[in-house]
Image 1 (spheres, rainbow, N blue to C red):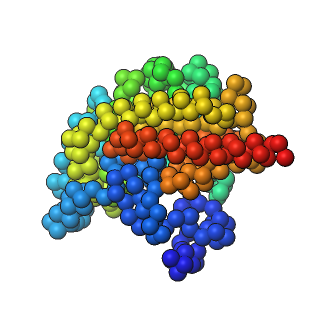
Image 2 (cartoon, rainbow, N blue to C red):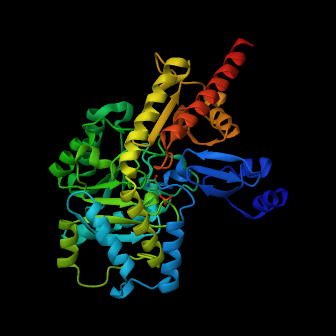
Image 3 (cartoon, helix red, strand yellow):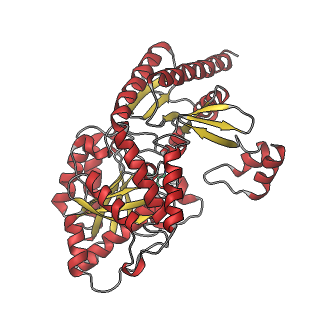
Length: 449
Ligand code: PMP
């Protein structure tokens, strides 16, 4: 164990982690195995994976069917290219399946290896589309503050959380951020998008991108009418609407895709994470028939955009099996039902504890805000590190969760695997109650000292 921690410090630069913390305290947990909703570390300690790791292990850990699908595909054809119109069966079948489960007229898929690549691809496809349509000046993308779209150059630029730009002062031009509907409400956000469109020049806007629920921003669920208004606004200006369903796709919110809650169909939809439940890196962009038609009719030369692993046969075979499991086991309905249970428990906790503010879920995507005064929503001072303390208390009690603390918030995020059952939800809620109570007591002691 000690040796692994030393080697980790010496050689492993962790993604989205504090290098200082790693060097001073060593790796937080070295995880060895996963089974269902549980992870086990090298010390033999078991945790509830209340975030499905990175909002992605939708069908839970340790599913042999996915290992078997990968094995079979690797033995038959582990990899071959999809460049230069070569093709293979797993990618064709998966493209057909994704078209079948995607809303409305989203029927053609470009494959990638993850969410950032999917969003960068969407931005390039959108700009390519406008070029083919004879409007090359339409190259600006409007996104939302607190939105998260990834860390490649364009997806970092679309991300509305400045910490992600500041680490390297790298953003590409042409990305504009409007007010998010969370806290601001539908009307203010729509007005802000409209103002951006007008000030940047309506003839210069290519697309608007948003997550159905802002995940990394703190599980910010928009008002029910929000995306209907977004769709109307985009139609009014002839702007394409890209839905980033990287977190919300594949059952996470209690529907197969998040936007289905409001019956709105985007022009493009990006996905990753839950498409393979994280068993193998994969993602993609689904485009509508009218966009596909323009590509088919007006494109003459090569589409100079493609990743070596676009449509990777083994990843596609795993995705197909994963989607089959989601459908056969009714995991979308379970996500809705268990999400309701989680919310019931959150609401009870709000009655019982003094520091619980807003609580919310949509399917198994949820959040609990911790505040100094739930009546006024007054936030804790950031140096109290309330949410990180709760995460620590949860970790001690065998729950892995994640905090969002941008702009002085203290939000605990939840996204357990979609296979979770009622008893497991109760256990998770009990541990959460215990952890929040412990931190609440500590805060009380500190205040009274
Ligand atoms: N979009 C959203 C909404 C995400 O949550 C994420 C990842 N958390 C991404 C895009 C980027 O995906 P990846 O990390 O696979 O590149």
